[in-house]
Picture 1 (tube, protein in one colour):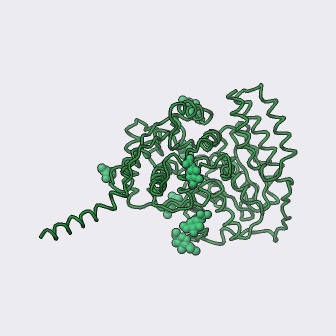
Picture 2: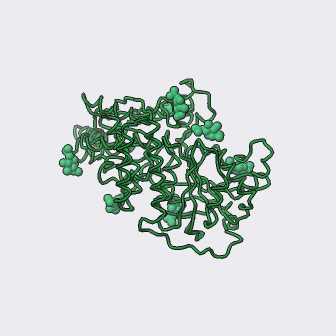
Picture 3: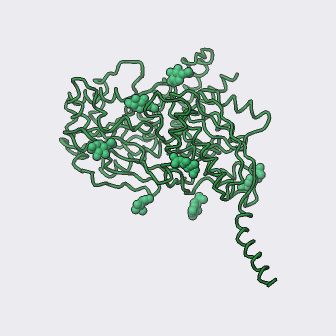
Length: 502
Ligand SMILES: *[C@@H]1O[C@H](CO)[C@@H](O)[C@H](O)[C@H]1NC(C)=O
Ligand SMILES: *[C@@H]1O[C@H](CO)[C@@H](O)[C@H](O)[C@H]1NC(C)=O
Ligand SMILES: *[C@@H]1O[C@H](CO)[C@@H](O)[C@H](O)[C@H]1NC(C)=O
Ligand SMILES: *[C@@H]1O[C@H](CO)[C@@H](O)[C@H](O)[C@H]1NC(C)=O
Ligand SMILES: *[C@@H]1O[C@H](CO)[C@@H](O)[C@H](O)[C@H]1NC(C)=O
Ligand SMILES: *[C@@H]1O[C@H](CO)[C@@H](O)[C@H](O)[C@H]1NC(C)=O
Ligand SMILES: *[C@@H]1O[C@H](CO)[C@@H](O)[C@H](O)[C@H]1NC(C)=O
């Protein structure tokens, strides 16, 4: 009898044991940077409920991460310098253990640089620009939980290789402030160095000169655009008038964050051009994020909608839906918990930021909407969908192919029609081998960068530093090699913050 009870106790302890040794208790200071301004799809109102949801779920599910007590502080980010200043000011007392955000490229660049220096892990669903891929130095502690623009560009290389296209014109709108479209297509430019790529920037203020744009497409096969919906329609209508939409050119539009505004009926405005626009859009294809859904997601999605409504934020119809940022920041909490737990089990402390960061990379875990796969460089592999108009009479779109980043496969779906992507009315185009030795392509882009940086400088009205700035850039333009040219934009940011702090 005593023997049996000992055995019982023994088994009871055996059962408890894994739970007891696996749960680690720790307080974690988290600093989150999100804009209060609700015009951003990653505003505090929209994203913070997802972070709190993840915190709650980690705590209550009783699993191995339930011992982590996340102490979350939300701070404003304004896409300029707010986040950096807050980080510096707050860190006079105690430095945070984890930073979530910022999303905006320029602000993220400054924060990540400082955090990397201080050995603090940063996870962002933004900072998507190509420059952040270089994790060897200043961005060493950045983990990107949403697929970057270069990952998106893999979709284009896959499509181009599949159809043996060689050349493209990139047309993008540049607001010279946050520059989302500039960075989006910079990803394509960066990755497609072996293709014949030209760029064309459209300024946000100026009238759209469709003639000038279309003049540039003659020696290319494909046009890839990133622009507001109205401008896209204007260009497509102009292309249609010039008979450039008969299959002799293929058009693409990149729309990652607001896919609901494209697809069925995006050509429709209720004006006299609707019919032409519908026909023109038959040659416009859309690259967007692949949406996956799993049962867990339903509850999450409903809860997010409730939280946004509770915050009294009802004035936009798209606001309740879960976007890439909402999902990403939720999964950021899970990824950090996994990595921290693993690191602590192996004898490291939460203060070893580089160790925790490296454990977030090169792994796959179950996120709120499906599997999340991080590459060895700490950037999320992305899955993207290619949408095309499959019914020209009705003007409706369908997903015709998917690109899966993890195993780099391009999957054709039943709705796919090879005819739609066949270039017609042209003999095999003779495309010259792109000049990779700092030739026209790179210097054209450099010109764009220089112009835009000066534009930004003027916007902030730091007239005194503009002179220094121009000199710096001119010197670099002459001396720097090809490769760094592509990252110059984010490097210049250090100059900007340096001067604005002075
Ligand atoms: C919010 O951001 C938008 C667009 O960036 C800007 O037009 C607006 O003035 C901002 N609102 C506030 C209150 O700062
Ligand atoms: C998404 O697109 C729709 C339609 O074009 C627009 O009304 C809405 O403001 C957009 N949302 C965001 C977050 O940009
Ligand atoms: C979501 O799950 C939580 C906890 O399991 C539950 O309290 C809540 O009611 C669920 N929400 C919905 C909309 O089902
Ligand atoms: C963090 O861990 C690494 C090993 O991955 C070690 O080399 C380094 O000294 C540790 N840093 C601190 C601050 O403990
Ligand atoms: C990434 O993970 C795989 C298996 O999970 C491993 O074989 C590989 O060596 C890892 N790569 C790096 C660079 O750590
Ligand atoms: C467009 O409409 C068609 C037919 O109504 C539907 O099958 C398709 O899923 C819709 N596509 C999108 C992107 O909404
Ligand atoms: C790639 O992954 C997807 C799903 O993750 C799978 O369906 C597909 O078969 C894989 N393809 C290859 C070539 O491994």
